[in-house]
Amino acid sequence: MAAAGLSRLEPLRDLEAETAQTASLDLGYADGPWEANLTLFGADIENATRLREIATDRVELVNIDGTTRVRGTEILLRFKQDGFTVTGSYVFVDATEPEPSGNGRREVPLTPKHTAGLVGMWEEHGKGRIGIEAYYTGEQALEDNPYRTRSRPYLHLGVLGEITIGKISLFANAENLLDVRQTKYDPLLLPQRAASGQWTVDAWAPLEGFILNGGIRLRFGGH
Image (cartoon, rainbow, N blue to C red; front, top):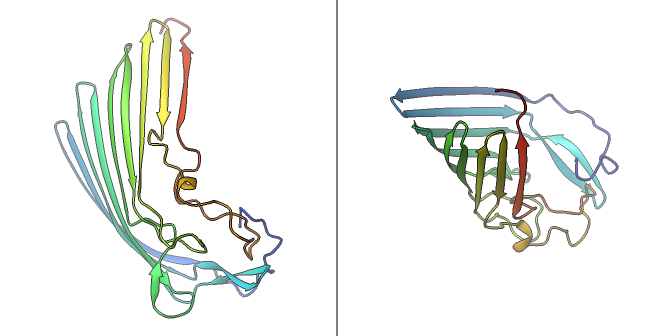
């Protein structure tokens, strides 16, 4: 409701507190420059809430009748040696909830099943650093979006660099090198205002596009 405010929300009534049972298992390994970690996790959530349309200009907050289930795993692998650090990660999430119609289950909206990242960095004290990053976000189920029912997967690339000369550091940072923007695929504005009062679809990809910034750092003192 943050995007639309509370003017169209019915007074809260008969809501029950959300409860969850969670479990996780972490396995770690380290040997010389290598480090690895595996996490398995799961949760069963009771009385989760969702918005329900009750008129063309009114909504109410209700408990979901059933269990929201989350199962997943996260894998991290890191190599670090001689000023170089490379980190790779992968996350799988299977999150489902009861269908609003009461028939079967569906994916929890805006929850990608697959995400991954790769970050590489070189750094030497007193000289500078340079790094690159790449993040992949897979498809997501969408809700109340008239343009599509599933998002597009996308890749987010970035690079940063810093040079240190004495007490002066020059740095630059570039984000979203591929200029991925949700508005390249679909409009943000809804054809008509939603019952909640919202005028836009939910964001499932970057909205700001390519970003470049830079600057100068000055260090004072003897250290």
